[in-house]
Image 1 (spheres, rainbow, N blue to C red):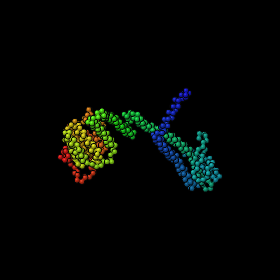
Image 2 (cartoon, helix red, strand yellow):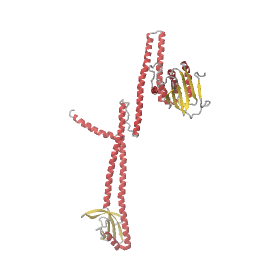
Image 3 (cartoon, rainbow, N blue to C red):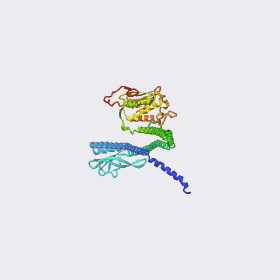
Image 4 (tube, rainbow, N blue to C red):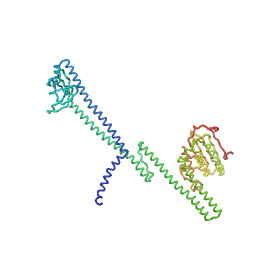
Length: 496
């Protein structure tokens, strides 16, 4: 153990040194960069090959065209002036240093040179028509060098031959120079492409790592952490914005969940304690009248608890859209009329005047049961907190929307609290002495959202207006025997 310890840091260092490249090679960013590099390299090689073929081929084609024109001209001279004239012309063109690198040779049937600037017939060159490649010896700076040459043969009757060629050492040097230049250009381009691919992959990895690090911190419990945005409006910024909105929603839900848990514990602790105390009282005092009263009170407490849980279940059902299959065309005026008839006796007993102004034909696609429950919650809240006066229910169409309003003349809700009252178990009454569980408006908002609508709280001066706004079904035909428009008002007592 003591001997192995000094080598442990070196081993860890080697492992970390090789772990980073292996981890990089497994990333999608590396594979994308590698694909980019391969495509880039193939493109560069294709372009370089095309440039080389065009450059080197152009020089070779020029040489062949020059030689072809030279042979054609000498053939015409032979046809006009014969062999002696051809020899004189070749001798004249071969005399001196013309600087055009052209090569000439006229030979007798026995191979003896008659004229030209080549000492003898090149070794290994067959006497046949067509293009030939051969080598020649030339003195350059006092030294004999072998140069490549390209030429063609013109057969003269009687066994005579004319070789016309050209020293292509300059063309070969040019070809090698072009090849070397393109090779270095290709290497530089490939290195630049490799560096560009590496930079691109590192940039992608940095953005992905930012998302990963934020996710790890959020999973560790830091729900307030967010993915950094760079303001570039690119795909990564859009992803960061969407993830941040998702994290905002998760944080709101978690906060709401904690608040719900706290409120459930607060709101259910008292009735459960009271329920237990009354049952204990019934056991202590088994007298028939006392026991019956304790049991009745316990049943009332149990009913309130069941109402709270039923309200929570209704909200969950509305938010999840579990009853979406039960939605169909319905008239909000009919829903409002049924609710008004149901609550009219209760409102009158509490000293309210309940009125209804409903525009027939305000149709939406919805769930009658959920909408009736939401409207009942609004009327019940008005009766509990308005204190008296008039409660007005209104239904109308406005700009392709169907509106359902419940207005009262109570104290209203302060504007600063109009968002929080929709949260579960939120009650603005500090004493929380009024019967209720703080779930009514939460259910109303959940029902509105399931029906692609919205809920608003507005001033009634004095009082409060709760407005439900739904998309209207204007394309549904009027039902037989039912008016298409107009308001109908009913008194406080149905049928009065």
